[in-house]
Image 1 (tube, rainbow, N blue to C red):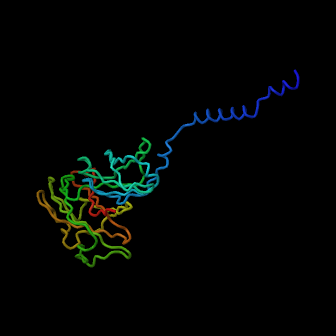
Image 2: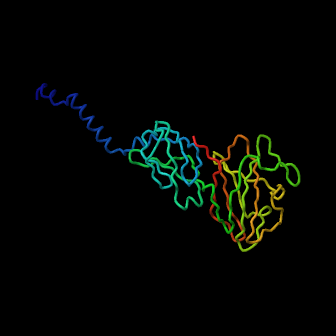
Image 3: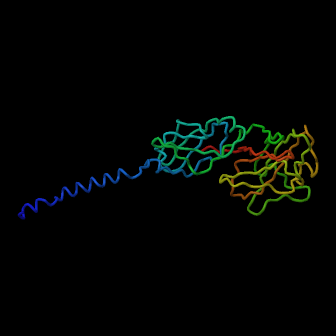
Length: 271
């Protein structure tokens, strides 16, 4: 075999390059693929992040990749009408939810569709009961009367001043409670009703003790028999920088606790 035939048997540079390209294509085809658009979606916040299950609240979502979102799903309800669409913002109107949501409320997942795939966002969203509703919980009929900053919270108790901590302010929740159980309840010195307030970061605050000392509340061991109702005030000590946006109510009676919590939104600010 002469030297010229040996030289021609060697693969050319172009054929080596072509073989390398074919190998790379085959290797790439075997790797798992992920939707590029879905991976780019990032949800940072909702404004507001508390809304009524009655529907109608305007929500603005802030994040990244929102211009590729084609659908939004809230608690199983799919929304196709989206507003304020850009790479970083997206708006929609909360739908009216099913009867179960209307009764109890709670935390709800919001999902976003990109390239035909649903992605669930990580920030929490609290869906509350309608503001006007009255709820029955463990035999007690609960109705939210008022909740606000200290405008209606008495500054004195039966045993002295009722003052907030330094850097905090008092926050009040007033409920009307109708006893429809089979026996008496004590609204101030027992645990028939648990009340908490929730801020924009979903921090939950417990009320101040000794509620029987608050002016206007039933006294300690004042038993409310079946068929009677009374108003009662729960007072909270909340740092001034924290914004309260919702109330959580749960009844606990001698007949056993209600496993459900009832959420009331008393103030939602639409952007």
